[in-house]
Amino acid sequence: MLKTIVLIGMMGSGKTSVGKELAKKLNLAFVDIDQEIEKKYQMNIPKIFQTRGEGFFRKAEENMSCKLINGKPCVVSIGGGGFLNKKIRGKIKIHAISIWINTELDKIYKRLNVSKNKRPLLNYKNLKKSIKEIYDKRKPIYKKADYTIQIKSDNKKMIVENIIKKL
Ligand code: S3P
Image (tube, rainbow, N blue to C red):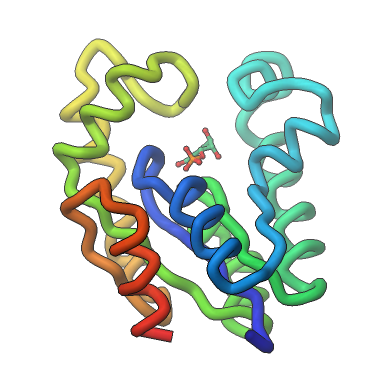
């Protein structure tokens, strides 16, 4: 691969687990932007939102994404809001190939419902509605990705094969 591959999409869509598998298959390094931010600030994402606010997180996300997307080809998983940022999207368009991991909302709901309180943007009291609202708002932007992979199963190997076919 001559270009970095960036996986985009909703929280809980499986970007990180698919990204790791894809990187292994392509013999590339894997980078998770949220994990890099957590390492840098020695705080998990909910704590960053809570103590510094979303604005601070978005700026950190922008800086980290722009830096890493510009580097050596690798597989990148970016937080669900990352692709909404025009500057990040522009960098991805120039330096990388973007893939929207478009996972069924029911699957997303089931996953996020068991890993509660890790995503500060969600309203866990009405999780289904909260996921749907965010998805509907973001869909037109996610659609701008170079490729879309529809996901209905948990079979990571099959998902990775599909991505490789598209590439
Ligand atoms: C966010 C998604 C999260 C994380 C933050 C905000 C979003 O990452 O960056 O909680 O705006 O959708 P994941 O997509 O990896 O859950």
